[in-house]
Image (cartoon, rainbow, N blue to C red; front, side, top):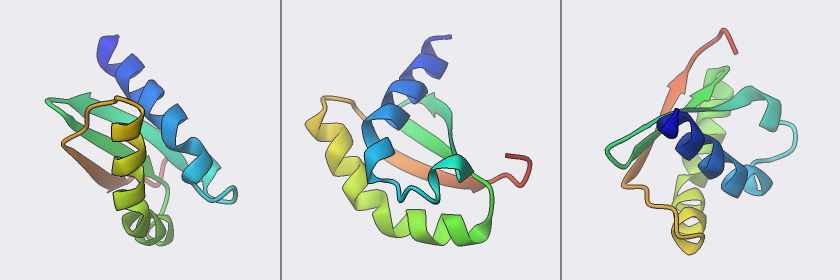
Amino acid sequence: MARQKASSVRLQAIEGLIPPMLRPLVKGGPFEDGAWCLMLSNNTTAAKMRQLLPIFEEKLRACGLEVKSIRLKVNRQI
């Protein structure tokens, strides 16, 4: 439950940085040991999100939310 909450809080923090058309295609995944996973619906979304990772990490740090790394995982079931 705590991991799900941690993921949700982080997703809310960066949601405004995700292009509006991509927001429905991105879900927060597990947060474990400082590594956070974003679940994406397709490879095109993953390519764009990969470009935004440094901005996401900076925003999370500015909000006081620890994250060592952000992983991207394509899950076509989203």
